[in-house]
Length: 301
Image 1 (cartoon, rainbow, N blue to C red):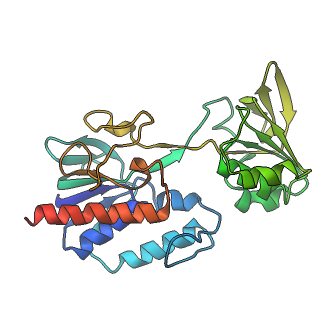
Image 2 (image 1 turned 135 degrees about the vertical axis):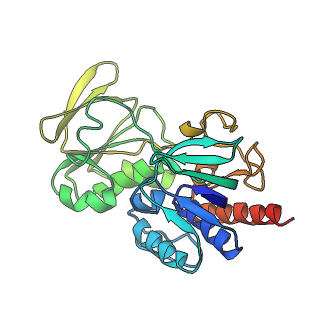
Image 3 (image 1 turned 120 degrees about the vertical axis):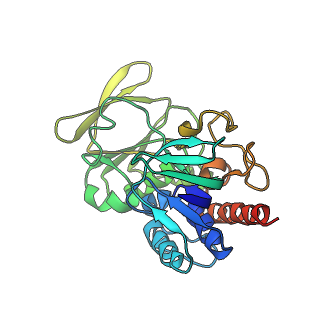
């Protein structure tokens, strides 16, 4: 199957690139490994008020608006489609089901994922005490103990949200100082429900059917009983698939120029996977648009 543009990743950036390809008359296919489009929007449970032109109560609502708007343009969509190989020389993308797609330009919009500690219990207790969002899950934790792991804005904000419901919230950070905003930290320091554990490392999650406690390490190891845990350790880019040829920074984010182009001609990267400084819906939409416009100019010279 031959396309002008193959887009890998169905989040805000990939959807934007696909829509603009349709607007400009480019043949395009949008590839998403999950069953639903939306990327990180599917995991945003707080209101989105800073994307110009629309406000939504959560990321799913924003995703639904984007998906609805996609019907205005013509391009192919492949969901539950796993990419098995990208050949930059032959300009082909191979899928795990055996299909091969050829392209004139490639847009990488693979986004980011939540960083993990890779400790015992981290996988086993997902949905069994490891919660996804303070906003979504807070009401299920009334009168209980919750541990928030992390030190950035997301960790501090979730600690404050959970303190509205839980009896006790432990904010656990491996460093002495926090990266999060002072406005959040000031509120936390005066909240009697929240206790901060600094210079403390989570090393194991303990439980039978559900989370019952966690093992922590400072100068010594100790056990802290808890009913739930939420991780907010930041994110990391989904770029392992592009180990060779594509230039990345020290953290794995793809390097791009002002056209959203990588070091390889007609290979573009958009959205969070190439933008550690401004991982927002607005930036994702804008970079997707930029890549599509540059591709259209290139292919129509």
